Amino acid sequence: MNPTVTELETPAIPLTGTAELLRFATAGSVDDGKSTLVGRLLYDSKSILSDQLAAVEQASHARGMEGADLALLTDGLRAEREQGITIDVAYRYFSTPKRSFILADTPGHVEYTRNMVTGASTADLTLILVDARHGIVEQTRRHAAIAALLNVPHVVLAVNKMDLVDFSQERFDELTTEFNQIARTLGVDEVTAIPVSALLGDNVVTHSESTPWYDGPHLLEHLEQVSLEQEEHSFDFRLPVQYINRPRTAEHHDYRGYSGRVASGSVAVDDEVIVQPSGHTTKVTAIDLLGKDVQTAHPGQSITLQLADDIDIVRGDVITSSSAPAPLTNELTGTICVVGSNPVAPGQRVLVRIGPRTVRGIIGSIVDRLDLETLEHIPHTEPLVLNEVGTITVRLAEQVPVDSYKNSRSTGAFILVDSNDGATVAGGMAL
Image 1: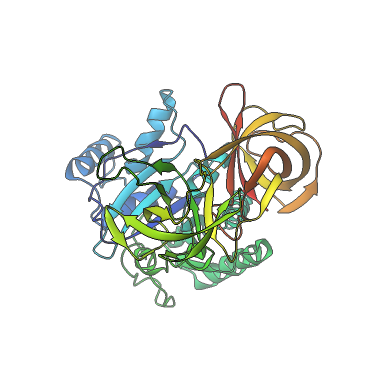
Image 2: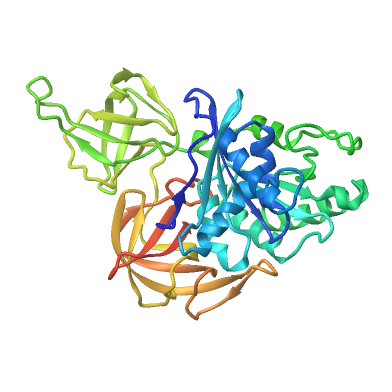
């Protein structure tokens, strides 16, 4: 959602290519211990290089510390920010024998709300930290609200610094109950709460003897075993067309394929499909996956479809199941988070990017603004400014296929772009 996102750090352990991949984002208020927890997770899972550890130990000793300050594994990025390098979300890669991971490490300050939206927009899981001493704070509610808006399938509440409250089960239960009430208000059905001490390593990569009353998984165990079966597998077939494949060779002179990544659902040879927005119906005659003919394709796979009829298809069209095509609309209603410096106001001309399709649009109205303290949608007609979340309407120059974001994160997300300078204005979720 944000074009300034920068990927950092070479993978400490290369992704295997065969293990399942879990994308997760971290979120926490300032000084909740997020940097230490991320450092502890990388260190205890043996996912950092020896020279990285040596540099951290050297920096820690220079500060008069006996052991390695694991927060420095991520805090080094802060120094880069102070030097003027734009880093909105730092991506870290690691793997275990059971699963590979991409961790989106997002800043904790309130003014970087947009950065959590960026990091969590593609996440399978959001890890929200709270300080066991301070409990649920405004930023905790804000992070929970964003996770709910983005329809992140799994939420983990890490109650950190349990060592500073004597590993009190009563305190842990109190915070878990309070957070679960907030989650239910937001429509979040699943929350896994884990008591941890990032500083000491309790329940991060190994079970802690200090919490005999806790019988759930430690953090890494949960990350390794949480289900990755999501709505993309159960929702209807969607293939946004990225490329029209017409190789100019004698062998393939009559070949015409439509390439893209399966956003949701499955497709098989002989299935009847509809091309949107034109509405043409046809059948799948062949599916190419990595140069091989296959009979079926599933979410996440990049494929090329061959169709029975010669249809005028362009980049951005969506090939869907004939039984449940995507709704067509020329007025988009959605929830947005403003990520650009310019406000979003009625009458503003924008470009709307929905998958590979870009159409011209005009902001129709501002409907409401989400109060991130009370979690209420408040009627609002004034422009939305940086980091604000609200509901808007956008009039489109043409009809486009778009699903509800709640049904499909892949085909229900959109981006608003300034039509003058091409800067990203906001990221949105269709209602």
